[in-house]
Every structure is written in structure tokens, then in C-alpha cells.
Image 1 (cartoon, helix red, strand yellow):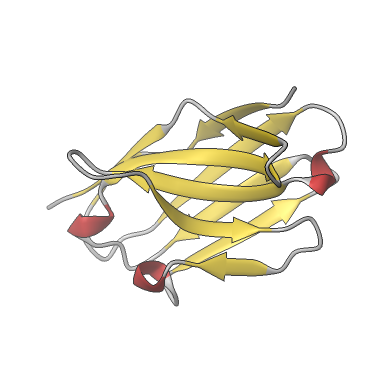
Image 2 (cartoon, rainbow, N blue to C red):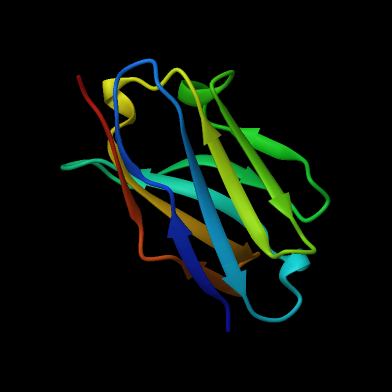
Length: 116
């Protein structure tokens, strides 16, 4: 069992930055791919960024060059640094831990609102 707790959401103006953190608890966390997803009102949840245990990240095209995902396996944390935020980045952001088709865990979500 893995538990995930997100923090760091909030209200920011367009062009601003936010840093989301995910604290994970459980066993053998390094085997999990850690990801950040988001869901805007009326839209499906979508992958924003993901990073495997060895540290190779991948990003949605919409956030490439603006967002950076990282993880600290020693501290069991995953971070999403978001810069140059746009109104269309407004959504609830969820931390995810996935191990193939065997296990899939979600945090409770944190709201990010980009508005002037």
C-alpha cells in the first residue's frame, strides 16, 4: 500500500510559478513510476509528467519546457516545478504512483488556479 499527499497548490497570476510536492509512504517506492496528472472541470484527467525510479522523465507536449518533474528516492518525494503558468494550466493536480498494471495509487489532489 502506498499513500500520497500533495501540497503546494494555490492561486498564481499568468506567467508565475508554483512548486507541487508529493510525499509518499510505503515500501519499495523506487519501483514505482511517479507521475503528476491534472483534471480541469469538464475534462478528463490527463498526464502532465512522469518519472521512473531511475530518473528519466517524460512530459505532455503542453507543458514541455515549462514544467520539471523530479523525485528524491531517499526522501520518498516527487516534485513538479511549474513555470510560465497559463490560465489553461488551471486544474486539480494529482500525484500518482504506478507499478505496471499491478498497482496504481492516487493522492487527494491539490488545486492550481492561474488567473489575474
